Length: 303
Image (cartoon, rainbow, N blue to C red; front, side, top):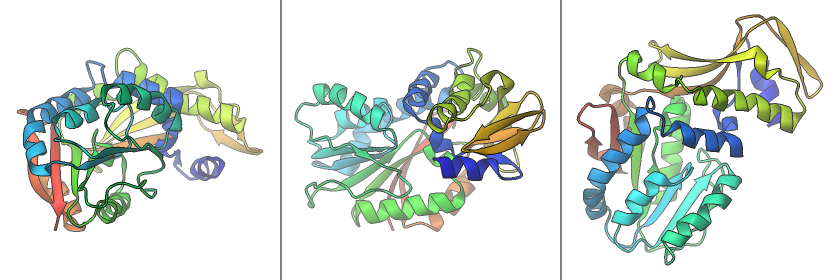
């Protein structure tokens, strides 16, 4: 973590890796974000999955192992688990061991006969899966448009790694947030209650706690920006004054108005989706969407 922070803050545009947002507190705050009225992605994707679940179950078949990348609180996972016929196992992969430890017992209560094998790790470099039935079809689940947090190179790495891990008959259920008006997007990343602002600033709380830094939380504000050229929402922390911060024995100077770029959330049109998949081992088997074309759930199969 120290290396990532020092390197990110040394650049001309100061940045911090978005994965650092998800400590225990950050993960809880993100779950709070998903139920806010402005935040359309979660409720829209859940509605799509609920409607599509019977068809997904038919296409996936019986006895599959579900492998979820970036598991979080597993709310949408339950939709698939309830629909699948006799699933042979569930493997949630997440960077937050606290989140996995907290939510596994809750899920196990509802699915007492389902083998659940949590794995702590970064989905970009998927850790080895636990021992599961080699005959079972492996189905990847990557919801929430987390893929929009990645650049093209990381998407290529993830899709290639997932293909290798899931095998030649594997499938991948992928959530993709579609391009839309900034009038919808900006409030979704800068809610009226300030939960997203707390989520973003919690990154500084974590760095202070874990690295002994001296960020003044009141000296930074959250800002959500739509970047049309890159087709993405951006989260920034804006310095409210000229100031200095010390981390790991190094001093970093901030000018008033200078920002730390903490997260990207890309929004895709059909041409962008097709371009990314063209360079991958995957192709679209089915595309499930809501009536307003806000969000897409793709079922991908191997080429």
